Amino acid sequence: MKLKDEVWKSGKVVNQFLTGVRGALPLAQTQIEVMLRLLATRRQPVRRFLDLGCGNGVLGAAVLEKYPRAAGVFADFSEPMLAACRAKLAGKHVTTLSLDFGKRDWAKAVAEAGPFDAIVSGFAIHHQPDQRKRTLYREIYRLLAPGGWFVNIEHVAPATPLTTVLFDEVMIESIHRQQSHLSRAVVSRQFVKRADKAANILAPVEEQCRWLRKIGFTDVDCYFKIYELAVFAGRKRDHR
Image (cartoon, rainbow, N blue to C red):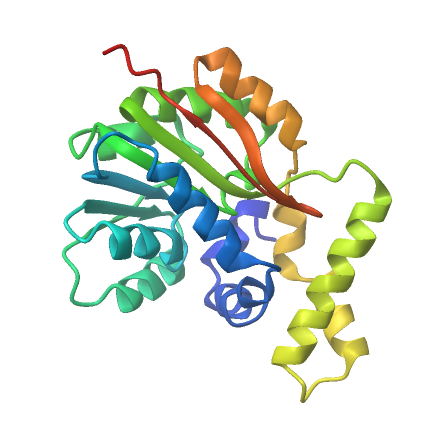
């Protein structure tokens, strides 16, 4: 039986996520726009960035579109995800790395490419236990340049069961629109029983923002939230 985090090494699971769930996320483009607006508050353009748990590279691709001269590092431990990322970014001068940020030595693999003006992550860190999340955020802080942003577009714990009901409803409806050849009942069953669901370890966004502040991040806030999806971020202090 696979470990919870091993599910993402399955090409079938990755394909189902990218062709179904990822494209069905409500207001996904708005979430990316929020990320870019945060990065635009820097004094200087983004020159170096890291897309951590990059998946198919959708976040880093958006950063590159706005900052075409930036050097991007795209890191994930899932080879099927990295393959999708390389296909998406074909022809662009970027670095892709196979690494597991669940292990403490992951930062060594990217340190030479930093410090980073931005580290972005999308729907990846929630697979880690909470204690590991907190440690990971400290590791991210150390990799940032002064004034650099950490932006996490993330699946977070609901404050009430109603939040989950509404989230599931909007996801099922959106997936059904994309896959209209399937009945709504089939889409609902597939979404509720999806293989990656067991890998989720969700934490409240308010609590994660408190962790960031305690580490030393400034301008920490949840800048966008819809049901169980949130964009929260913090900036490394600039002592200039």
